[in-house]
Length: 269
Length: 269
Image 1 (cartoon, rainbow over the protein chains, first blue to last red):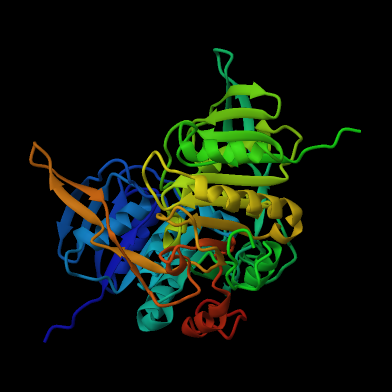
Image 2: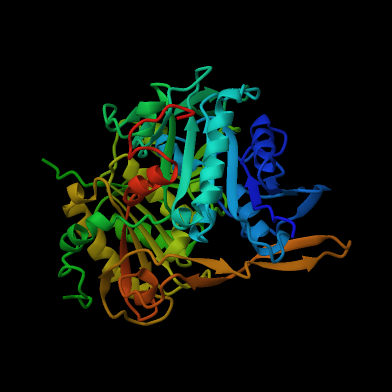
C-alpha cells in the first residue's frame, strides 16, 4: 500500500509572487502534498478581515502532482475559509502554514497581521497551524538560515498535531544574522506605536497621512517576550490562541459594573 | 471654575449614517464632550485591519460645541490611530466607545469585528474602551431597551477608568426583547462556521462565492459564554484583551518542539 503523504495547506498575505511563500512551498513539498490558496493582491495589515458585502472569486492557477495553487480575490482569512469550505472538497489538511511573511509579526503587530490571521482561522477549527515571518521587509531575503528551523518545526508540528489542536504557532526570524542563536518559546511583547503618521500636504493643498510609527514596548526588559529575543538573534515561537476573553479580569469587571460577582443583576438593580 | 467634562472618542464600523452610532453619540453627549472619528465607508468584518500601502484622508464634517465629527477613508482601526495620533491634537480621551454595531459581535466573531478592533486599539494604549453591538442586523433597530444599560456602562466605565486600563469591554444586546433580563459578565463562546459559502455561477459561467454560514459552538451548554446568555435574553459584557499569547500552552509547546522547557536550544541540538 502506498504511504499517504500529509496534506499541507499554505497561505500568506503577500500573494504568490513573493520569495517567502515560495520557500515555504518548497519545504512543505519535501514532506507532504501541498495546496496553496493565496490572495490575488497584497494584503498586509489585513488582520482577520473577511469579505462580506461582495462575493469572492477563486482561480486555480496551477495543478501538478503534489501541488495545487489557487488565487483568491480576498483577504488571507477569506483564503482559509474558502479553501476549507469549498476548494479542498472533502479533504482536511493535516497542517496549515502561513508566510513566510516579509516583515515581523512579533509583538502587538500580531493583531494586525494577515499572516497570523491565517493561523487563527485554522486554530478556531482545531487544525494545527504555524505562521512564519522574517524581520526583513525587503522583497529579496536570504531565507537560508531559516530553512533548518522551518524543516524542524514542520516535522514537529506534524508529529504533535494533538498538541496544536487549540494553539497555533507564531514564528519570527531575526532581521539580521547569517545563523541564529537558537529557538525560544516566547510571549507577545505588548506595546503600541507612537508618532504613527507622517502628515503631508498634496499638490492641491489637501492633507494626507502615511502610516509609519515607532514601537514602544510596555516592558522592554521582559525576557519572556518575542522582541526581547529577536533583538538578540534568536528565532522566536509564540504559542497563540483565538480567545480574546480577559479571563483574569472577569471578577474585577463585574465589581466595577456593580454586578454581584459573575451573577445576574436585573436592569435597574 | 467650570467643571471640565470628560472627552469621549467614538468610532464604529458601519459609518456615520447608521442609527447605532447616532444613538451612542446622543448618550455620550449627556455626560461628555464627544469627538467622532468614523469610517467613510461601511467596514464590517475588517477586524483590526490597517491601511499601509496607501495614505489616509480625513475630513471634518461637523464641529459644534461639545461635538466634532470626522470621516476617515480607512478602517475602524485606522480611525482610532489617526484620531489619537493626529486629529485629537494633544487631547487624550477619557473613554473610547465603539458601535452600536448592527449585528452581534459575540462568540468568535469578535476576531473579525471592526467594532471590536476599535476597542482593542484603545486597550493596547491603556485607554478605557467599550464596544456595543446589537443582535439585529436591520438598518432600523429600536435601541430603546439598550439605553439604560448603555448609560449605566458609560457611567461606570468613567468612574472606574483604572479598572479598564488593560481590558476593554465587548457588550452585546440580544436580538429580541422589548426589555432584557439583566446583565451578565461572560466569556467568548468559541466555535466556527460551517457551510460558509453559497457557491453560485454568474451569467458568464464563472464561479463566485458568497460568505454565509452556520455557527457551530464548541461547547453550547457552557453557561459562562456570551451566546448562551444572549439566547436567553441577557445583555452580555465580555472583558476582552489584546494579548493573543496562549500562556497556558508555553510548556506544552516547548516540549512538542523538543525545547527544554522555555530554555534555549541551539539549532541542530
